[in-house]
Length: 336
Image (cartoon, rainbow, N blue to C red; front, side, top):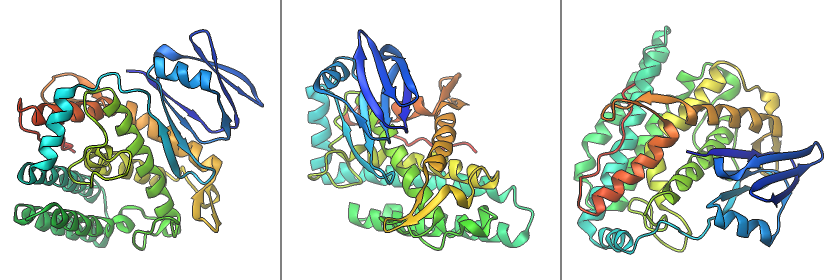
């Protein structure tokens, strides 16, 4: 599996033979294309048609973020693995209301199960009874929502259950992060209202594009989703699969950064766009995020270690097998 290149400084992306060249004020940087799967662009980077043709041939994905760190879009090369039979099966599963509800329910079940795992992990590490009690109460509420998933009659009701469950889950964040400078106070987006929300928004975007890049390596069409609406949005399947992994990837990264005080208030700024990470703050987050994706676990069925990035692709493969009728889809649930 190839590497991810993060570009935070301004410069120019070029092709030199079969090598990616990054030219910036600090000099030249050469990156072999055969070992690179994706590039996340945060700085003011220029490129030309010749480079995009090169990216298409090399199946190289580019994700673009603006000056404020907001995700703007993706250069998604021509789908080289898309199979007509899989796309037809995806559409059939989407149009079949009962089948779509089955898949949507499993995405929500996987997401809430992993939220419970995160809460259990931190509850066991809290010595202050009040904080542990707050986390336990949130976990109990999550279990109540999970028990009601089978009662959902449509996807809209499932989305409401998921939203309520996530609100209960977010209610434990201040008990997990013992730093009043990073109080949560409820979810706010575009613009984020405080530092915790800025972190959640930024890391969620990283999760969405990480999943999108792995879907590209399968036969699935990322435009056809089941929990999130398939509409004029370019991609939505990555949002479905990301729900499962946000608790164990995004939230665990955030808690790690804050509890070991790797991020400080100086790594955030306030402007008309709300509270945002500074360039230095983003660099710290990206380093920890990449370490998390490269981290490995002992896979329960493969009997070998796999990285979290590999798990993202495996999740897409499991969904593909489900819609082709090979094996029912079961979401990945962390064991700790």
